[in-house]
Length: 247
Ligand SMILES: Nc1ncnc2c1ncn2[C@@H]1O[C@H](COP(=O)(O)OP(=O)(O)OP(=O)(O)O)[C@@H](O)[C@H]1O
Ligand SMILES: [Mg+2]
Image (cartoon, rainbow, N blue to C red; front, side):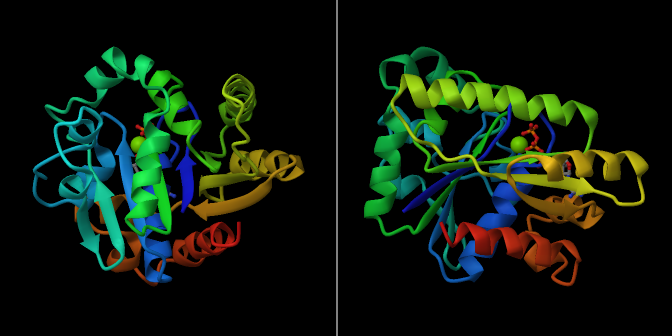
C-alpha cells in the first residue's frame, strides 16, 4: 500500500484540497483508496461527509473503536477515516499519548494495507508538531503543495530541513521529489515570476490552476470530479494522480 501525505508547514496552500481530489482521482482509476484526516480542524471530513460519523481517528488511536468501524466509504473505492472538527480528540491524543507511541501511524498503515487498500492519503494540519512528524515518518512519500507567492520559496527550504531531520533521526527514507504549484494564475505577473523560480528547482513540478470551483465543490460535499468534471484543473489533477500511480 502506498502511503502519501500532502504536506508543508504553511497554512492554506491546498493540502486538503489536493488530498481529497487526488484521492478521488486514484479511486476513479480503480485503486482502492483511503483518506486519513490527521488534522484536528477536520476539514477533509467536513468536506466529504454530509453526516457526523460515529467514530473518529482518535477513537482508533486511543483503542476505543475498531478501525473497521471508524472507516466510512464515501464513493466506490474511496473511504475516509475521519476526524471531528468540533469536539474531536486528536489534538489531546497528540499532546498526551503520541510521545509514547511515535510509530502508531506505521501500525495504522499496516492495518489499512491488510484491509486491502492500495493507497492511503494523509491530510495534515499546517505546522510541524509531533503529530505531523509522526505521520510523516510513516510515509513513503510527501508531496508539497505551494502557492506561487514569495514566502513559498522559504517554505520549501524549511520543509526540506525538517524532513532531513526526520529521515535521519528515525532512520527513514521518506521521499520528497514532487512539488505542486497550486492556485496558479498566469495572468498575475508575480505568479509567473515565482513559477519560473520553482521550475529551476530540482523537483518534479506539477501545477494546479486557480479555479473557484475547487472551493465551491467543498461546500457541496463533492470533489471536483463530481462538481465540475469539465474544469480545466481536472486534467492537471489527473496528471499528478497518474504520476503517483507510477512510484
Ligand atoms: N487551485 C485553487 N483554486 C481556487 N481555490 C483553491 C485552490 N486550491 C485551494 N483553494 C481554496 O483555498 C482554501 C485553502 O485550501 P486548503 O484548505 O486545501 O488549504 P490547506 O493547506 O489544507 O489549509 P490548512 O493549512 O488550513 O489545512 C480553500 O478554501 C480551498 O477551497
Ligand atoms: Mg487543510
